[in-house]
Figure 1: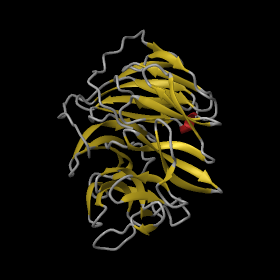
Figure 2: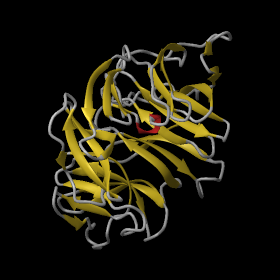
Figure 3: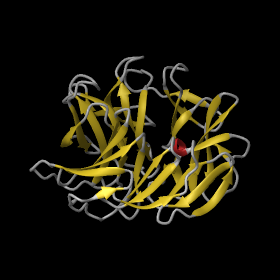
Figure 4: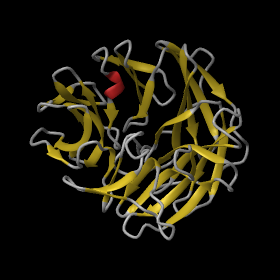
Length: 343
């Protein structure tokens, strides 16, 4: 989920307190970085030796390679969201009792920290603010750019983990017991309800600005489907047992771990073929970071059964790739998000 906005994060005062949490100002690095904009930029978390080495760094990666160091992150931190213009990144760490969000401004390498008790998620909205939600407590708040809560939105307890905010930050989708509900991020108002259509479906991404991508579970197997935000026919996008569908050309989806070791496949609604890189012919494995047109960014493994260590950009038509970060380039990549118009 990536947003576009021009609102600058303002300085926090000592008295700034969010509902359910407290806010603190973090020191940014003195050296400014160039503004980064547009599709194909990636935010990555990179470690020297492993995800628990306490030496994590947030970096922005150019579409064709080259990195900009933004700042240090805590062990266990992951990327929650990136704005569409690349100017803002949310990283998060859950320590067992609270979630600690770092709200980064990439151009100044500065951050503000939002601490919330419990296990929370966060995403940017179109006005430059945030939506935060807690699936265990059934809570959702609309917040300003500094993280201060402005409104509490109605939210069903037990389904918040399946909430999703669209890339434009204008609406969010929630899975409920009876189906999916589309809401306005500005007001929290329900815009439309989409029945489950006989399957347990959660929002995963979007095919385009008018169509959702769902991950649905039927008879113990996952499958990607599409459905218009306005409601309508639910159509399959992949065969059964696939998830994490990326609408590149051709489309790519993942097999679950244990069913091909998380291998990536080229998929249609009815068939699939293993996605192999060139010139080695090796099956591509790892977590997809994003993709559009014929290009796919992957937090890739270097050996079968191993952990993701690099950020690679693949041509889904030819199988050729470029290593943009990781491995021999300043440490391993443990998490990555690439700016596209789908997630």
